[in-house]
Length: 331
Image (cartoon, rainbow, N blue to C red; front, side, top):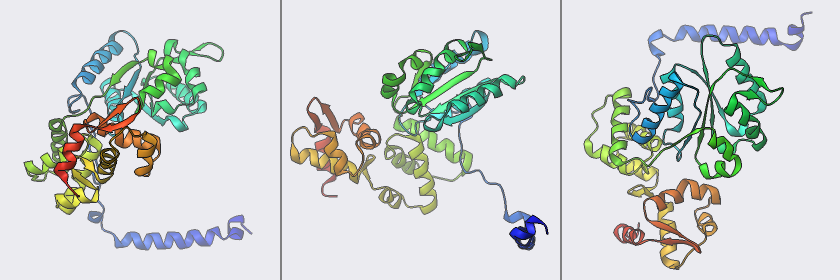
């Protein structure tokens, strides 16, 4: 008897094929259509804002084409376009790009990439590692001679040149753990976007995907309630297109005014009531977050926008923070 029959696999496959064939006949080709779900800029011209970063990248692209390989460390907060820039660099150079996340990137992955790069006679390759500050320290140190001289530490073997790009939301941690890696790369630091930048990004996104008639006032509302972060702005636009009610969108994301959320107001009100420096650990507990998440996801915005300030003894509310609380009232 066939082993597949013993396991019952033959019968299951026959049932699957019969069901699938019957179902397939129920569908018409016009019911299943390809759909574009997102738009990502393909070149530096389409990439809105970050003029200084783009100028620096342009210089280094020219250097790569004419002189020698250049590696990059792209730093910026979440959702500001670091990965997009990595893919744009690949597009501009017409290089293949292999993407990894540092936390799961291994020496085996690195060797596999080097072998693929070595064997490919038609394309040059880019190794892109996201959240590079989370890279295993020993693996980062193993990569130093590769980035410096394209020299494999084992056996001092020369490898085919490639471009390395690391992206990080915390360059300070990377500096502490793997400073020599930064020294071997060109640092591209993304700055805060303006509301006008965000509005242009939203309009470009709408033009590429939806072509809907969206009011200028709705663009304005979205552009000041996204923490000036492109990824969040685009997500809010998608939500608005679905529900067609701006108040519902803002309420669903607990946004009260000027990107401030209910959690932000909780922090500011606590600082106002205490009226003296408060430790970041306390604020993290109040908002039910880890200290790291609070500092990265929430506090950085409050500080950058001038609602909260750091002191040697803790965090304090600023005059701007007090004024916004008066303006908002008991929400």
